[in-house]
Length: 239
Length: 239
DNA sequence: TTTTCGGTGACAAACTTTGTCACCGTAGGG
DNA sequence: CCCTACGGTGACAAAGTTTGTCACCGAAAA
Image 1 (cartoon, rainbow over the protein chains, first blue to last red):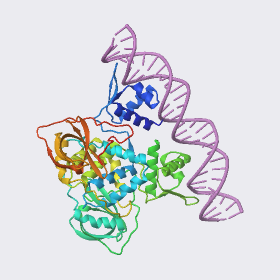
Image 2 (image 1 turned 180 degrees about the vertical axis):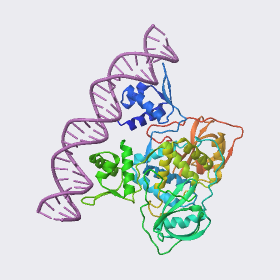
Image 3 (image 1 turned 90 degrees about the horizontal axis):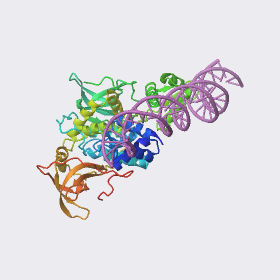
């Protein structure tokens, strides 16, 4: 039995039984006492809170407050999750909610059913209220929702986008670009786009963009956004 | 060098260089030709689209259209992501957006900086527009946002919640419960709560709840929501 | 004081990953 | 038509990692 599966099995058994002795666990997962103890150590290293008591009636116990799970999700699965949560949360007026719904359905069909079960189980673990108590609600009002329908269309139909851009010095210019990606670095959103008149990628802060409009009759292909090794691929973000 | 790190390095090198020969990659990552070829096989199994060409001037190339990354995120990291995206997306009127912001800050501080970098890099990969084209926007209007402030308070302050609940048969009852969790099974939201008059957990469909209010002067502790092995922990959800 | 239980260190056995080598097929250049 | 550059595969031993066994420690309950 694989080490990951064994960790998973141990966690699940502990969740189910509440408490168990190491020998019971060893028997359950078909491994030796020593291995189970090693596994418990590894799980603790991973952040699981596992209480233990010596002596008669003792055993190990998973702290019920701990939200940790053993699951590690691939990016595709995480994307499915993000899409699903975004779909539920996003108000109708926010962009890409339709896409999100469509994506969710698509991903649920595409993933093997045990993956879907894992996702569900993971969502179950998202008990609200585990995080810190209320604090200031920081302002995230940098993006004007009124801009977004034009963006959505530009992305989905792959049509050029024209808008007015105010740079860091306050100068206004008019741009026509091929929207390639949205870059989200909280709390700012950037539009990553190919500027064909300059023959290069440019990054535009969303809150500096105004009057976006689709350029009818245009159509572009996706370009390969260049990546740098070991650094954020977009080096010079407008401040 | 670890197998995961090597896969990562190969993918990044291919993204940076566009194309590379197996021998170059082998030299780069400090492994043998054979191992790199095995790795490429493994990456293909994982869903990466890697083109290859024989002969002079040939080499391997990562399909730029493929959004795949090698990253596998732990649940804690995924939660950080979810929280961050939710924070950005959630309109002010939706619940838990304050919590989300606070959580994001907390998590960014708690995670080692390379994890934050991974998260950033992962967000960079969330190129919008990779999913299927526009489809019907399915209705997600089952949750009345007006309900949610009372819920948020009940969760965060751990105060009892009283509301009117209409069951599957249409009968209205009044309930007073300890809200323990929100269960999100698209497209429905459930409130998982301890019903102290019945001494048991109950599941309430959010769209059947009306007139929620905090019960002043009450206070409860978190309870351990029981999990079943290998199945959705909440077996009998109201239809 | 004995039994039950978590926890540790050492070390060989079992298993997995890696490197080496020999070899195949294809494409381009001379 | 041969040579060279390149991706790709199978076999097998070397290197590395995980696991089981065993001996032993300390705490707590009967």
